[in-house]
Image 1 (cartoon, rainbow, N blue to C red):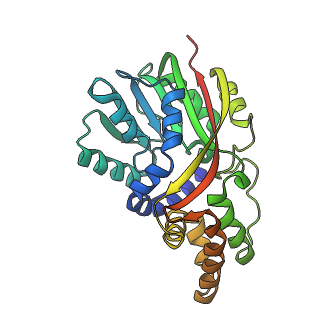
Image 2: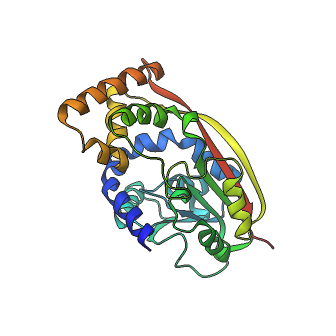
Length: 280
């Protein structure tokens, strides 16, 4: 459970910022949410589970899509994230959405409860992805669908890579240990698909989703968003002097300018969408 504890601590510190930038983050990753809805074949009156939802996405978008005929449950192991999601669900008046604190590998639901399980950018941080997918199969109905989104290679995602390259010049960081929790843990094509198959998921497939991460804000404001929402980045910046942080920020802003226009910032992005189903 040590890995779980470390990850929860990191994301607890980030919950406030993810809620602060909720609307921007929702719009940035809306194409990924729509891809998960499509590939999981989610339509009313489906009953859907969203695992590792953070402050509520794609749970809230799914609730809006399926309407009162359907139902969606969002889970996350971080209580602060769940509370943030619950606040937004209440604000939107969504009666078909509920929220639970739960680990991906230990879900508080009876067998055969859901038509689909989705997860957006969560599985990379699971302590045991195989155990998690076996648990998803338990709570899925026969032939129920699984759809998962993970990042493709870092260099294919400049919204992250451009910043990371500058930060690396100021704070040297060794690469993460193999298969440790990291945003790009499943970037290699076929890696996550093999994990699903090992867990017993049937009819697995994978596709590459290319889209644009767009935000209607200046490069300076985007830097603020990135530096606040990433716990790893905040930790690295905390090791630097004010002068170093100012210099680093200047370099990042210069590098990000290539992706800016009078409409805001726009970055090409690549994500792997991996799907499968519970055997009948």
